[in-house]
Length: 306
Image (cartoon, rainbow, N blue to C red; front, side, top):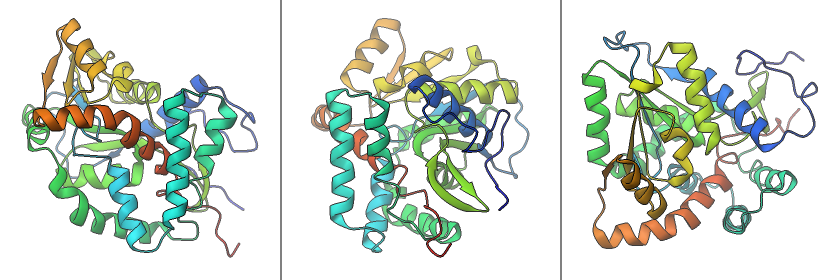
């Protein structure tokens, strides 16, 4: 059977990969795959400022809440998986994140538990549903302030990419609908167009985002000192610290403190009460749900008919 993967330098087939990769290796692999899979709109005019770009996290930065949660709810309404399945996966991810457990075997177990949610569904079906779900559950949640910041970069002739732990399929839809250059997200492995239910490396989260940006910068000839990055979470400090112009959007407490200490720009589009509530719950719940479902709602396992 011929294998077809997202291609990039250094790709190896599943049988060739080490059985266990440490966290740093998985982050690097996820970042390289995300950069190689970054979608660029064909209609985009070549930028007048080609060495500068902007990178935006999605959840609570571009839109209110976790994009993967909104997407998962849409799939749940369409009977893609049960309430029990999503609750179980979310609980496992919440435990690992809050308890700080980083054992690869435990993390892999939580990740793999989410992979069966939409097994057997086609890529075309998922893309079509993604468009529908964006219209019904995501479009009205986009922060106007963040959208305006992205437009400023576009107007200055710079390219703008989303960088998110959400699956590349979802990230691409959001970027396309917002008129951005493209997106980098968690990448799925597939064989002959059928997802294997495995991730390439790991979720595009934390250090993996920085790896993705570095890989994309090398490919596109970007000067990171002239680039900007935007996020709400201290988990994205590796990404924010990589560029010359970092900015905190709707920041959690740790990121706000770090931004103030280092003179970074800060924009908060929430009300004071909502900011306090979301800042506490966001790290513990929204991030956990994102990690729990990111693979499961975007990846298909092996075709059941095979």
